[in-house]
View 1 (cartoon, one colour):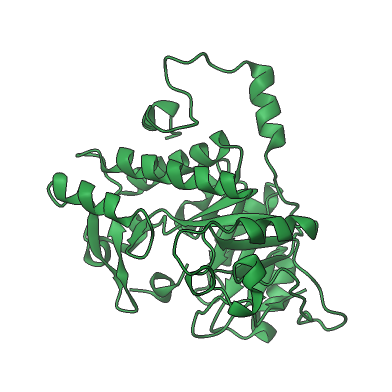
View 2: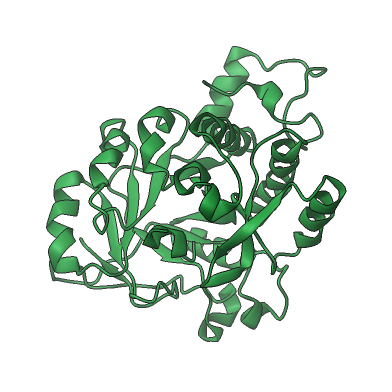
Length: 323
């Protein structure tokens, strides 16, 4: 198992997405006109290539008014000079439990504060592993038990035993169910006012059965990932491709930007060039690698790179952008 597995976090047709998914067209509904489709696509926020970002998936009581998110973060870049602020925040769908007092308070306050600063907010959702601490967890367990224990796989890793790899095959309707659940989560992103969505853990095919517990083919991963992208766009949100570098070239047309962890650590950043060439930003973070060794390369590649702690924690600080 590589270190990416330890991180805290063939075009698909509309028919792949269950008709029961709220907010998406069913065969019985009239198809939108070309003008309507164009207007909907134009309304989706798509960030410029040179957007700075902040990755904060853990909250602090110091920022109780915004669900634990520090919307005033400012850091001196690796190149020196005055501190700079992000124009894009990637934060969890839910406010931090230690701040909100529960695990189901949407991060609405943080999103509103981010917007007040003139910035945009990406909604973090785990789409490829099932986390026990999420408010909808029992629904996944119920499906798993009713369908021959066919959904919940091996623990994500020894470091994260409270989440399990999801089976994205569809022999017992697993993928249809997962997409229905993801649609409900994305509805909450929309409710909270987010501008985009990051679906995490969408590279099970790279890890293999020994890690996940499931046989996931590259083709199956493409079907699922494209369905997720279509789902987000259908709800009016832009969407990130998280990791899955082996399929970046095949998926760049379906996604609006990339979120990557440790491509310099694993010497695979060149796989993301397709996003920059398409005019789509790459939001990148390293944990164990020194900024001095990757920031110059990041600048050449036109990535938007951050350094976060070696323990993979994702609080507001340290916030160390390359530029």
